[in-house]
Image 1 (tube, rainbow, N blue to C red):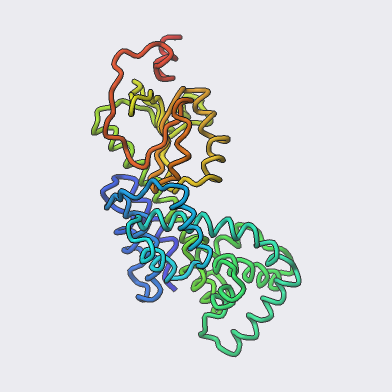
Image 2: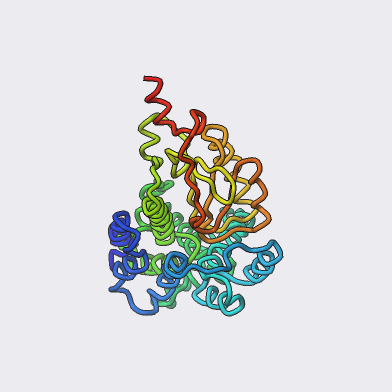
Length: 353
């Protein structure tokens, strides 16, 4: 079995050097030794995650009515290879990355609402016994994947449940989280070859959960942060990133603090936060409460970029100091004469010295 997850982490890590090395190219290289059927969904995930970088779409900012229409369609779908094709065919004017982000967010909400019914000891045991019976009768069949689809559970979460139960039977106790996670990331570590194959099939066929998706999402988030820094450098704007800010003692920081504030569409911007996701009501409200207002209190007004779009009606806090965009702004005006209040944390610290 190929070392796909370990290699994905290594190769995707190379993307940190430059945004021009797309995640799509690196990821496809990482899974080049998979069969075409195994790589199909993984390729779709990678393409959907990076097409906003390569092919920006005008349909990123959606009205609430447009968003609700897409959500209605996502409710009919499960994370299979065909789900994104169905959505793209239905909504051809929308970015594939936007559709994938909306689908992923809605599917995760649905799983959170329903997962408890799958995580009951009697139910887990029934799933496990059924897996053992069917795997024995059909050793090469994707038993876990078919079971997950039948009971409406994420394939990757089904794999975790069954692997956890298997390890309990092996050791007579609860397996450690680190052991469980390492086997999910690298199924070849699982001592049972048939179960290892089933876990692998579940992971490679799930576009919303699992270590492969986590790897892609992490790389995509980092790639957009790199893209943001490159855009700022193209505009000759001086800035501090979150790593620099943390060395100065700031614990909760945005991705970028501008050393000299700018104006975007008539609004002052001191900081920029990059979000490689779609901004829906629930996620945006969470970010406001846990991040954005904290940044506003400490650094002043700022800009949030939802690279995969957002519900247009959420951009209602501009007068209070939080501006939303779905791309890097093109109409930036540099404020050359910053007041003491407008200046960066580093400049203020130097004055105090």
